[in-house]
Image (cartoon, rainbow over all chains, first blue to last red; front, side):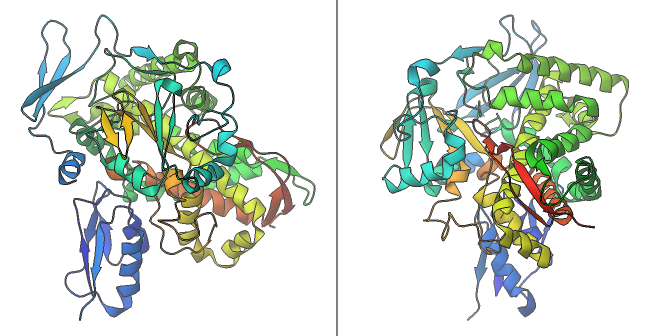
Length: 66
Length: 465
């Protein structure tokens, strides 16, 4: 699984940071930053899906491998 | 859509430049958009900078609303108590956008799609004024894209400039350290309720609790005296609830401007580490902000930071007073608060914003005219069945919850991290102290764009040791 963050769409709701701090951080302006490169570790995949399903701006998308 | 999105990201065709007008000493910002030079001025004009146009509104003539589809009025005292039913009835009756002749003409999108579309479209809808009232900015009012209380009243490209000045102060890592302070405040308010006899004592969870929390926190962040809290609540009441009264009669609003300018003078004499001093010292293009702009931002923080969260806290406690099963779940499983918090925000979102139509446009068949008002009821968007499963049911552990309580697009509530923290701590502390409570009388709801209980009598059934 891969997770993508569209920085142009992000408006700093910080939902991803609250739900999945292992995958997302926020900068000084509250804008989201992705902490993982490449495949999301298996144990964090549910959190990645949760973050995507809660972003009000649809800035987070998930691509499942295979 | 791409054009709109580019605009909404605050990308001007050219970076704004600033010059001083020699005759008046005013700062003149200018930028180019679509080949047109747009100028805006910060400073006083002989005519004043805050001129209002009266719009038609005669409460006696209109009377109570009988048809919200064609005569919508959110200041009708009957609206806020039953607003979710109004939205549902209108949507099910095939009315995605309601209309009203009141306030000089007002449109009300009610579906998630239409609310989202307006929120993202900063070309056709200006934020020059965001509170519907019987006056709207006249030709000599602070123009778009700045407005009187930047950045909430600003449009691109100035919006992004003003917003970036404030954002760092409200980023999660700046807000998190306030948690113990808010806990202390909540416990103090609970202590001040005095001796409680379970099964008998009635407290007002709005008056004695919710209304005191956000005002204290934002007042302290700004470095204003604690004794002035009641004054701030009066200002907010005047600005947001007395919208159908003549602008000139809402004295609190004039007082607020003078009060804040006095605070700026006082902060200049006694600089300290607070938000007011921060705003006075922050630089834009190497220049400090005018007192007028600092004052506008402070007004925004006071008005946006007080009865919004107060309403969310009140509505959440109102819910819990009627749903002991949700209350018990939060006590048994504190982790569920992560989801419950967002569900409180979705189901009881307090804030409806507004826009003015920037230019005539056809919105899904609605002939919108320049200067018509458009209400943006994010709370209605949060209960659209096309977006949320079983939207009128509060699901304490709802996992997928893309709610719009803090708005959508470039005007996402700047204080959302603070609001969330206050709401979370306020609920946690109340239910911990009072593991069981129930409604004990009539709830009085606010009037206008911010929806929440203003009086909320609850009977305490159990007190924690």
